[in-house]
Image 1: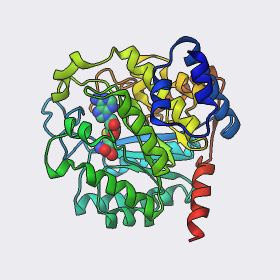
Image 2: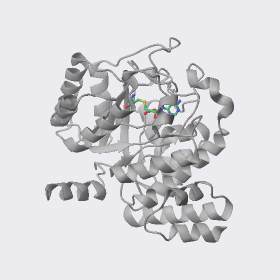
Image 3: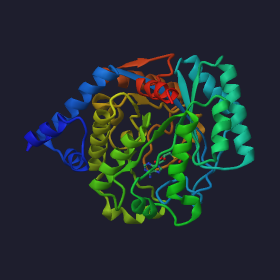
Image 4: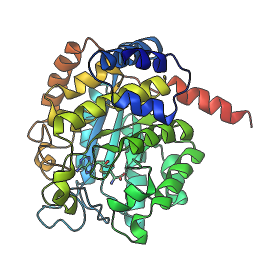
Length: 366
Ligand code: SAH
């Protein structure tokens, strides 16, 4: 059996069937897969990790995704919105600690007030860091004009997880209305890429109704779309969401964890030089989950630098780790942890990928 995985791992391109076989690998086969992905990371990226300081600046959301703890319909939640000063202070913390870049994340709100506010914050973050701090946005679906405005104000990366690339599955985990359109999510990703953002996407792994074939399709989509960044994590049920009623359909948490590591390993082999996040949700299952992801292919960590008193309210799923830490605690803890994974944190750099640079220079040819 390991012979088969060995043969697959020699291929230049994987078919859907190949990926499914890799996702099902166990024992010796799985070790081969992880060895291969670790080797590719070492060759193309080096044993390095970059930080993106994560500021979860608001849990106010206009959407009602059936899996998400901050969905509009969840009334068991204190809603918060950081002040501009709190956001700028967190950005200054990242800059002073030489994080290289930050990520601003929130629920999904489309309004002129929110668009202008984010534009203004982007400019002020660029000012306070003399243009040095890179900024990733992760604030959901917006019009191309809004994406363009923010790009011009200084955002250069955007994370928009597609969540599931099989439209049937997407429809099972979202309400059936125009606010939760699969097509629009794809259109948004496309316009982000066209504008020039380094574009990141990803999916949740271990969702109810999800098959191995779906997961293989997700990886092929990311390759085909030519993403620059990938953020995938295990699905973890949240008690106050509709999807929690399907818990009996789920794989055990440890299997979802294992499957996520395999997904990370396979995408690293398929897309050798992209940025891959070691998702925080991994740590909700295994205390050293993120470090394990780094060993087998991930190269980005998003330390939470949201002011501590708000963290408890940005609960996307049960058992979210580190909600009572401060930003300083996070930094010390991560340095020790990444050392344990034998990797080195690179400070003071944006950490753009060779992939993005190649893609950009390719674009300029036409
Ligand atoms: N709303 C913003 C980002 C905020 S949520 C956007 O869509 O761009 C960030 C990510 O958390 C989501 O994309 C989703 O993949 C993940 N998430 C939400 N609920 C989750 C759950 N129950 N388990 C695991 N991940 C979850």
